[in-house]
Image (cartoon, rainbow, N blue to C red; front, side, top):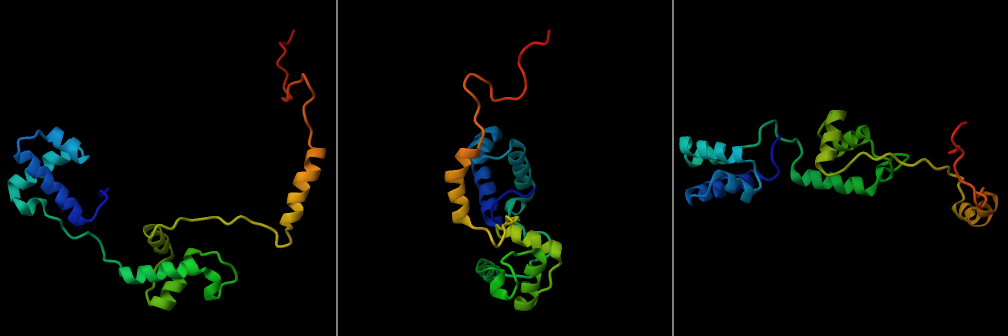
Length: 172
């Protein structure tokens, strides 16, 4: 798995490791200072000895580039924050198909539904399951009932008795 950080930050970390090694610090101590595995430090050192600066230089991120640039992703997040109703949906629930439609209609990019979920995860969004509540629900009536009626009807254990229904007496 790729470590966290931009390619430039990772390159600076590798350069720092090489500089510490040149000062005569042991690879294990360099790894400890930088918060990496000792094997990584040894691998970077070998790459530096073999290829010089090019051996530890950052490389482009592998894979296909994103169809949305950073500006488009920021716009998408702003739209998501407005809620789905602002875009004509009957509820404020964003689903991957709905977000895919929004991206297609507004940005002209057609994403597969599965990739929409990955894109949302990259943006820091997580799947949420809405709580189901009846439209007729009376919150103040519920609060009143809990305060007045519930204490009257709830069962309380009698003094000196256990609240558990199981017996702890040994069977004779």
